[in-house]
Length: 385
Image 1 (cartoon, rainbow, N blue to C red):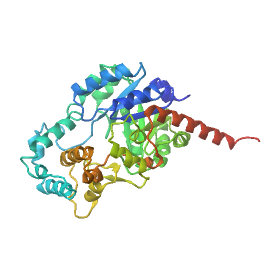
Image 2 (cartoon, helix red, strand yellow; image 1 turned 180 degrees about the horizontal axis):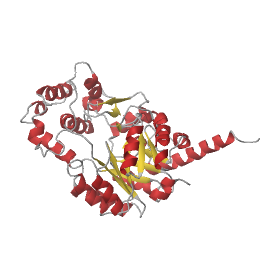
Image 3 (spheres, one colour; image 1 turned 90 degrees about the vertical axis):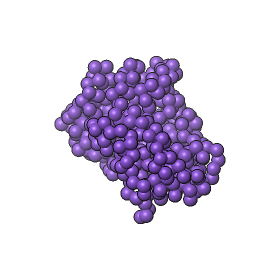
Image 4 (cartoon, rainbow, N blue to C red; image 1 turned 30 degrees about the vertical axis):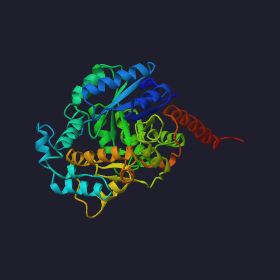
C-alpha cells in the first residue's frame, strides 16, 4: 500500500500490532504488517531470549519493541528500595484484595499479611522495574537486534531514547491520548505519533479515536507530515479504512489479537472476549494507578464500587493488584470457578466486533479483505453508473 508508514517501516500493510506474545509478533510481521513486542515486565536477560526467538521465526521481516517510561511515578529518580515502596501501601488495600478473593473461595491469607506478601510484592515491583528504572538496559538489548521500531507510552521519551533511535536508524514512536501531547512529542523529535483513543485497551485517555485522529492531524500541520498511527478500538478493516480517511497513515492494534489462537491469553479469557460486547470493558485506575481499559469482571467492579479504597499511584497499585491477579490466573487455569469469574485482561471496546478465535496471520488477512471492501464501497459513491 502507498502509505508513509509502509515506507518508513518497510512493511506491506500499514498495520502495527502490539502484543506481549512473541508468536503474535512474528505472525503479524510475516503477514505483511509489523508486530511489536511489549517489553514491560521483561528483564534485559528475558528480552534477549524473546528477541532471539523472534529473530529465528520472523523470516527476516521487520518487528519492533515497546517500552513503558512514564513521565511520572512514585519513586522515579529516587532510588527507592522495594521495602520503601511497600511501606507506602496501606493495610486497607491489602485487606481489600484479600477479601475480594476470599469472597470467591480463593485462599488469600498470604495477601493480607505484610510479611507474607513481601516476596510476591517485591517480585512484582522488580518485574515492573525492568521496564522503568532499567529501561535503558532493556533498550540496549533491543537495539542489539534488527528491530525496525521502538515505541514508548505514558509520556515524551527521554532524550537518550530518541538519541538511541537516531544512532541506530530506528524510528521512535510514542503513544498519546490528547492533541497537546502529540504536539509535545513532535517538538521533541518523535518519528511516529500513535493517536490512542479512549476505546483502546490498556492505558488510555478520555478522547475517542474518531475525534482524536483528525484533531492530531490538524494540530501537527505546522510540524510537517508527521506519520500518525490510529489506535483505540480498531478491530476491523472497515474501521481501518475509515480512520485512515480521517488522517491516519496506518493503525496500531492490540485487542483484536488477544483472542487469537497464537495469543498468550488463557482459554477462559479468550472465551470471555469472544462473547463480550463493547460494553463489557471499563476504564479504571484499579490495576496500575493510571487509567487503563480492561475486561469487566467482579474484580474490576469491586474496585470501582463506593466501598473500595482509592487506587494508589503507579507503581504502588500494581504491587497491590498484580499479586492478587496472578493468584486468580493460576487458580482459573486449573478450573477454579470463582477465579474464572474474577479473571480479567486489558482490552479495548472494539472487542465487541470480534466473535471468533482465528490465528494472528488470518486476522491480518481479514483486515486486508475488509479494508479493500470498504475502499470499493467508498469509491462506489463516486461511480458514474
